[in-house]
Length: 144
Image 1 (cartoon, rainbow, N blue to C red):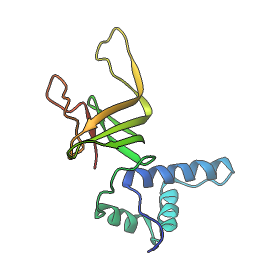
Image 2: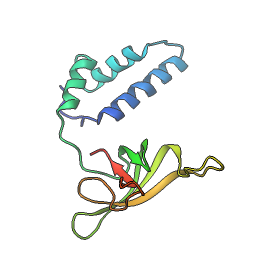
Image 3: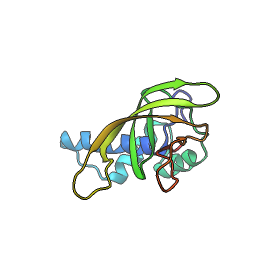
Image 4: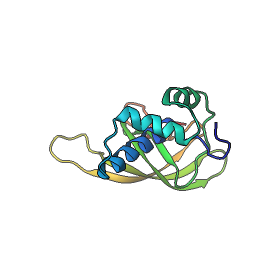
């Protein structure tokens, strides 16, 4: 196992494998998704994807950091994105700014849409916003 590389979260590890595969294919080197996962595991010093995957299941959640990858739900829609801003507030609340990888439609109407790519919110210690939707779910919730 590598002593110098910090392990990513599962979503980031899979995204790295996908990006690696796309780069290799663009250069004319076809690799399957499984082979890209195996290569990604080796980059982090593990013998194969299954070993790395098992290790990722037992990692302690990393603290939020600007530029880091985040996953969660916004208005009930799953997302992956990048943390663009982080401010610690009084108590244990944190104000965050997130840019989604894919825009999310924030309107429930079938007559029109409004897509958002960047949102901000205030999160409690558990990673969920104090603000709730009409059905009681947090407006923004990060997977910590």
